[in-house]
Amino acid sequence: MRPRADAVEALVAGAGGHVRDPAGPDAPAYATTGRRGPPGRIWRAVWPKLAAATIAVGVWQAVVLAELRPRYLLPGPLPVFGRLVEGVTGDMALVSATGITLARAGAGFSIAVIVGSVVGLAVATVPLLRVAVGSLVTGIQTMPSIAWFPFAILLFDRSERAILFVVVLGAAPAIANGLLHGIDQTPELLHRAGRVLGASGIDRYRLLVLPAALPAFVGGLKQGWAFAWRSLMAGELLVVVATRHSLGARLQFARELGDAHRLLATMIVILLVGVLVDTLVFARLDAAVARRWGLVGDRA
Image (cartoon, rainbow, N blue to C red; front, side):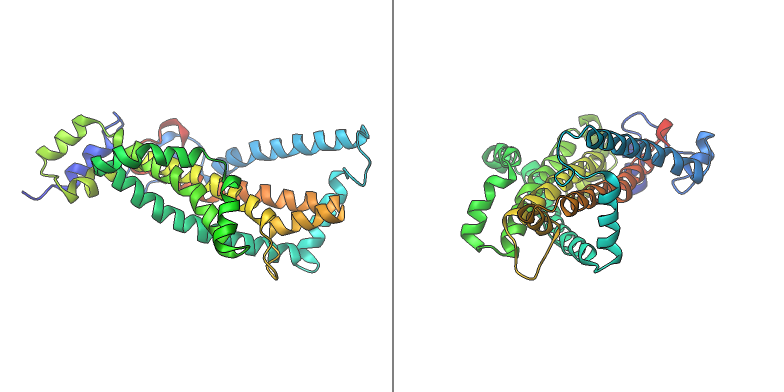
């Protein structure tokens, strides 16, 4: 008997006791929650970040005014922001370095998603693999990424491959564990109901198990990105590839030259990239999954 895909989908969507939005998945969330439209939602999402940035800059300026360190070691926000603008609009070196780092991050994280998904699915479905390597995945996840670099440099010398190797090892276990936990936490009642509707074999995973595991998998992706980004920064500090002046290389050169303005400006860019990726990619992905499975509720 072929599974009824629409029935299985509805079963998964309602597994947590939530009801799908009666206006449909494509209806704006504010139309069903009675809240303000997109401008209001954007402002509610942006103002806490602006407030946090204002507080951080204020504390920074207060520390500078207290003269706990000389100005050449700890410059104030305005000179650093000036150097940041100069790096973006002047010789474009900061923009080029950001592009190199983002390209590495994208490549490493993409490979980690593939590897982590395959490993997570294999461990979840093959009992022998779960016994053999299940705890090993968690063990690798808990290892500091920087501990892998001596081995990576030994294998690949100081090259792009050494950096990507550590980025993948840093991110893939978190992604695998996210998928594994999502599959493990699928209610047994949902499996039974799916079998009644004819979902078995590959169809059971395609229509029921993987969609039900999607929220946990997205959480694993977010954690994997955090590990990948931190691993990449550590790698770029330790492995400087000639003609590839990345953000990490700029940090290293600024430290060696005692250029605090350049160092802090680069650190601000690294922070902004992390915030923007979380806001523009993972926050939207999380919201899309919540809407897809009727989990929006009061968070819309």
